[in-house]
Length: 337
View 1: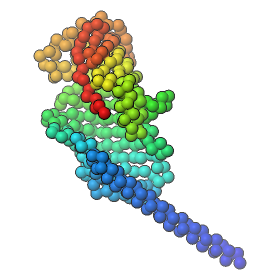
View 2: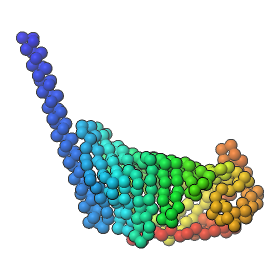
View 3: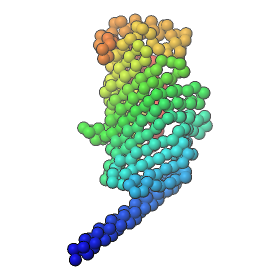
View 4: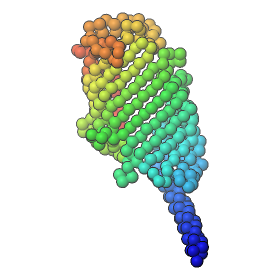
């Protein structure tokens, strides 16, 4: 009797496992079908809105624990004027953690704007991860990393970057604002030039609207009060030159910038890379003027390096050091609605 009981329990357990496998398989294929139809719906929605979204050779796989969407080379997104063509795209979500998405973008990619030659990019790795707020249908955080990037510009020149890291999230203390962190290592804007390392950390006022897919909210703020950018720290280092900046800048509805920047400069007495390459005839003059101006500036430090600090005022795109006008920034084209 005991032997029959154990056999019965084993059969019931086996039946339960098989039933669970069948049920899980059905649920997975239902989820995969739903994802595939949502992508197709998004493509049709883009077309009906005058935009472009095309996932070529779309394939949904990943059974049993992942939902994996692959788009083949030639997949495109665009807004009617500008089109981005990708070398492929893979987006993965774990079935047990659908709030987190991981993506890899295939190389190369090209950006084409109507009437202008395309810009193309190549890389060895381009991956990103996002954390979703499923209740609000919005992003909570976005992180991206690119390695060994080469940009081929329309004029035939190339720009190389060894590594790019970007991080975007809602500000925990002001949920309407967007925290932004960006780092570029081994940037070479000119072939054979000194590597440049750039880092930025700051906050965009009301920028969290971008995570919810509501750029209109940003436009309302821009038209009413302007969009503020709070720069916690921005640094650039190349050769012996180090530059660090912080301050606040506001973009107005007229496309003009206003604000204040405190800029510290170290190592300027050893030369300024790229000045001669950009302006060969004025290179020595620029270096001499920089040394003369900074010799009267207050002392500060950048890390362990001695530096001089200059405060720049930006008034309607005009950049001034104290009361001395230096140059005028180009006006930003703000789309009016």
